[in-house]
Length: 70
Image (cartoon, rainbow, N blue to C red; front, top):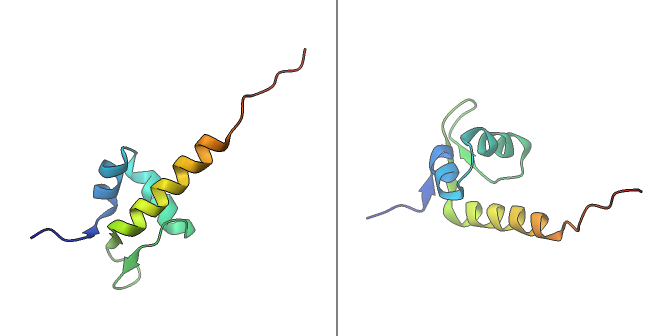
């Protein structure tokens, strides 16, 4: 049986990004995660990881072309 809970390393692999990016998002409160105690291991629910990844993708898509001055 698989669990819906993931470690930061698993989220990074799942999202195809560097683990430090996931850790920064956790510390900044951009990604919802849970710790049993301060400094303990982070666990992220897959639904929270999916929502965070979708948010990153939407922000990336919204960017328009860069305009250069002549």
